[in-house]
Amino acid sequence: MLVYWLDIVGTAVFAISGVLLAGKLRMDPFGVLVLGVVTAVGGGTIRDMALDHGPVFWVKDPTDLVVAMVTSMLTIVLVRQPRRLPKWMLPVLDAVGLAVFVGIGVNKAFNAEAGPLIAVCMGVITGVGGGIIRDVLAREIPMILRTEIYATACIIGGIVHATAYYTFSVPLETASMMGHGRDAIDSAGGYSLAS
Image 1: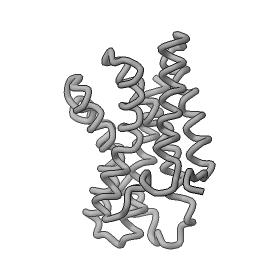
Image 2: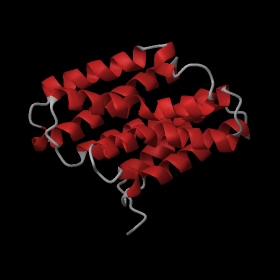
Image 3: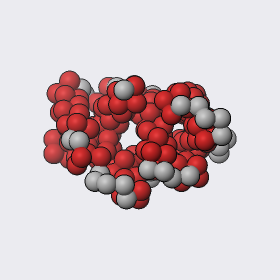
Image 4: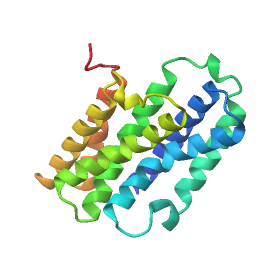
């Protein structure tokens, strides 16, 4: 149950980050909605297609799609002047969503009976896939390819999560929390591998 609610929170947070970037680029409302939804469900869509484990998650249960759309529309209405938002807001929102989605990706891979390496890869794809699609659609260099440590944080969080579950038989939800904590610390710290 906890993972379900973390999924909803992560979906909303990623949708907000997509809307904030679209607003900064002065996209029309449809473009803003598309960027919000793609950011929220893009990584999980890629993951589910790669795992080939039944229908894509938002087709099986449209809750995440509805959350992404409603959050995007509310953000459009509530945030009238995105240029006045602090510069730190988008990276912080991305870090929160990233931590949540990496854990969900690792969990889904283990539930699909994948091994630890594939589970870590699925965690990384789930965490960064939507953001990459968002940045490409916005004609920006994807955030994970710049100096931020997001991809590395995904890998570290995924390894912590997979190791806790696979090696020490820690329950998936507990392992997920361990991975989230490691991810959030790495991502929100503003560290750069280039400096």
